[in-house]
Image (tube, rainbow, N blue to C red; front, side, top):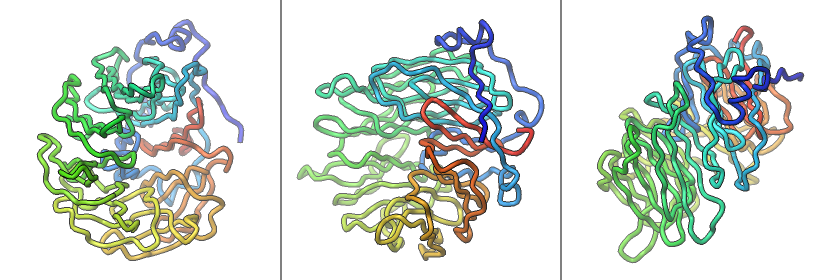
Amino acid sequence: MKRRIFVATMTTAAVLGLCGAVTPGIGTQPGLAATESSPWSQTDSNAALSRANLIEKVLSRATLTKIKYLRSAVAPPNSSPCLQAGAVALAGGYLYALTAGKISKYNAATGRLIWRRTPDQSYGYEWLAVSHNLVIAGGAGCVSESEPSSIVYAFSASTGALVWSRGLSETLLTEAAVAGSYVITYGPGPVTSTSTVLNIADGTPVWSSPGCGGLASQVVVDSLVMSYGCNPQGSRTLDARNLATGAVAWTLPGNWGLQRGDQSGANGKHLYATDPTGTVVDLNPLTGQTEYSLSQAVTVLAVDNSRVYATCGSQHQDLCGYNIGTGALEWQDTQLIGTPKLAAEADGVLYLNYGAALNTATGKRITRIWPIDPPHTALAVGDGRIAAVTGRITDLYGLPGY
């Protein structure tokens, strides 16, 4: 498949953009890009980490076979010593890419670079969100193992100008998300793990809670922040805290592992976690009560309004779809080429990181959108497009004309 790569090196303004200077905004372009309203505005779609776009209607089972490669956006090489995992968002007809340690805003319909910023390269960046006309990025330090630190930046989505930044000491950021007017962060440190909630307007801390460590995850469901805490004996717990105040709503003892939820706001009803026995269960986010278990499930990849999608099977190499209301197994795909590491769901289609697109009702493959190798490390579906990241390159796929 031939790539049409848009590298911003053709004009003086674009060359400045490569060096981190701001290229003047070009505004909303006429045509299809300006009419879409189904954003994938942060790394995992929402603070529940659902990896599902519930309002995308352009890309669907009916149009899937017409989807083709559109264009690529490429960031300059990275000289940072830190691992840069990459993240991507699609909102308002724009592509926001956090690749090679740089934050870039492109016109999604043309590939034109609008602005680019290069934050402190002593951090490794892997989280991105677009909200409140801000582009927010977070990263963990890689220079000092004995003094871990992290940083969160907020840039103007319009101009790329820095609005605020907030350092997080004694923390290696592993999860961050935006819910309402808050930025929620989580990460382990040399002694404790810490959940910190920031005001999205100016980055000021709202509340912070230390914990006893845990897997690299944090989930917001029904305006409750789920993270790891400590009991009086110093053992790990699973805690639910009020998003606005940090007040504890409920606590479960034992070594729980957070996975994903459905929605971060008031409509959120499902929280998926691995219980102390190793079973993936659905918890009521308001009470912590177990509602059902997912037979053979290992890693939850995505959650939409109808189903939960997880790796499964005795060898952990199958893919299963479970009914979200009951937890009943609806289908199991045992013919996968490899174990999927990443998925994105939109309008009845489940996109896997190695290019397969599945019917969410049956698990059957509809088509392959991109080659198997190399598998992509970041996926987003929104505004009628699919964004897929490999290294410095962000590929866009969609219907002709997008």
